[in-house]
Length: 348
Ligand SMILES: [Cu+2]
Image 1 (spheres, rainbow, N blue to C red):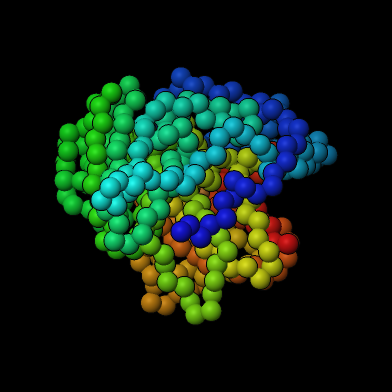
Image 2 (cartoon, rainbow, N blue to C red):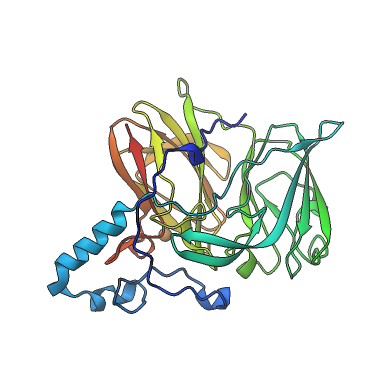
């Protein structure tokens, strides 16, 4: 059903890595670290993009190049945990597909040595990817093992009002230790997502979101895809600047063969827009928020605002290792090398 070769299956290798030297402060409230910050270079103080120029020591260019090279060469670095894994439903006697999402506190390794106090569905960030067919009856059982209340909202998914999952608007919050069952009729194709709608400023960027796909997008004549890959963007909270819950060098590269077409769904679960730029290969935008475009268009940079989804086809027309990143440089590349929202598309 899922037209995706699991990226988790891609061959990765462990490379010795400089343990990041910035301190992780699990006690910091997410509100206090509203925007994920790039890691500092060894020997420098932590700081955002605005500090880069002042921090730069032009006399030390060889050390800088060496440190950058070491960091960049460690990609793709191995970490504990893979987010967004496709979850299999329990199929009830009447054919209803039942999924269980357990909200829980989770230690999540965003990049090597950086383990944060996240919250998750089923122990992974992003939460499990749910994929069903058009016409399916779906139940999602929320089990709240958090020390605070929560709910789940179904963003871009056909829903009745009482199942919309907004605390104090359509339902009471689900307290710690309680469960709530959402009933969803998958009546139309969707490229959707789900997320907490209770204390959203903290719960969502700390880990409570995931992708929800219904059916398949129509593709242009003659196009067959070999992979369907959500790329879920985050920039804040415990998780910080990341793609699919990991920061470079722990982001997952996309590996394709020359001539392949792949379908990428950007899902922005963060708090700011991210212009997603792919080097060398065109992005053909075919759907916005799961709605197919009457006139698909090509772009090399696709800006994805919070809450939005863009679905893009990429044809691997040229071999090589292509940089693939958010084009806000303070989200992806600094004096320490690549970080945060940076990965590679490798065509062989
Ligand atoms: Cu960005």
